[in-house]
Image 1 (cartoon, helix red, strand yellow):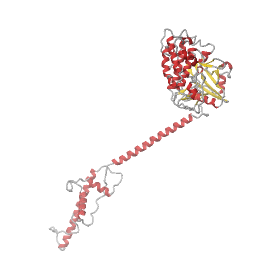
Image 2 (spheres, helix red, strand yellow; image 1 turned 30 degrees about the vertical axis):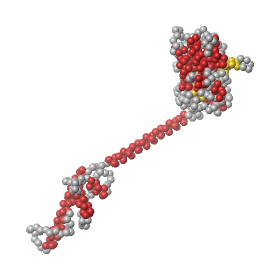
Image 3 (cartoon, rainbow, N blue to C red; image 1 turned 60 degrees about the vertical axis):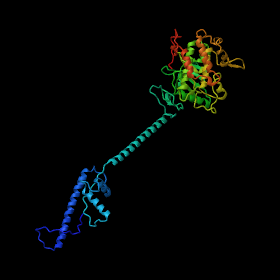
Image 4 (cartoon, rainbow, N blue to C red; image 1 turned 180 degrees about the horizontal axis):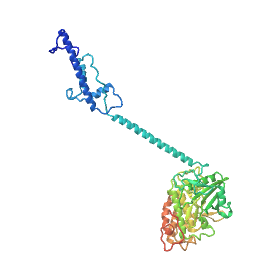
Length: 512
């Protein structure tokens, strides 16, 4: 660009009178030319800015710094090879490049800079800003979701705690009789199925007393080492069995809580149902469903001596027992070991459906501590390994099942007194004869000797022999026992055996 300070030779236009010396006229003409040149440059710069603004993206929400504006302006003006401006390039960019080149060659002029063009607002794309907004929105949404999840979990925990309060807070259902409340029970058997979700009926003592006729002797159903069992009739004609536990200190209370804990959470057709409980003046009461036929022990060794139990009915009872044990061992998590399976704990309803009861000594297979667990059970039903070294497994229940199966076959008690000082178990007495086909029919209960199928007798005897093996590893799983007994029970009684005539047309079986 020509300097405005340096006069150039110019010719004076004709028609203009010369009143001053020639040198002054030349300087005036040079200044006038500079003014015109500056005006043309400003107009060209303004036109270039307008063109660049028409091509620019939408404005940013912030003002660019002069350096950033200059860089973006240079970037928006493509140049051709050789450093020359491409056609249509911005004059402002051309001016900046020329000034930069002059400064690099050391020939830059120190003349006053031309007046600054109008302020230019440079526009860039909003992609970066949009990405930042998206990241912030995603972070806020994630925080909100986590907060909602934590709040929901905290509310659930509070709700669970409120349900587990053992004091005062009772849950009264609309169909519950007066004086009977549903209360939560504290349980370690959290994985068991339950229709009441861990709720068990707490029955007030006056209601229980009225239902049993003030625990009249005429309502006594049975007496055992634990106490007495009474028949109870509640309002509406609902019948039940009430077991009153004798006060026996902490051990009795522990068994009471254990039975409530377990029976309050499981439901199975071959396990007795818990209806409620009561604690009054140190005495503990448990209310069960009423089993009209009483216990298997009463039927076998009572006044009737098993006369009501035919061969098919006995096989049905054995099958029901196996189904109940199979549920405890295979379908409960962790598995449950009954630890006191015996004929007196097998209850029979009016249709001779058998159900396992009395879970006061039951334990889970993952919660066995030899140091803190006392040796418990009934003589004649206790497995040898448990009696000798306290080893307790599901196979201990299988041994007790085998003893009950021998009772059904022979009609004998598990332990019989030989003399004043000697007793003999049914296992010791029967084992030599069970393995001899010629002697086996002679030891069968006379009540069923004429109605049994000899082939089925040998099969049942083989199952019993395996169940009472001294070595636990030789005993079968209760599932295998179940599969062995199903073909021996008529279809009408819950098995798969088809016979010409059903044993009794009025008998019904419980679903498995």
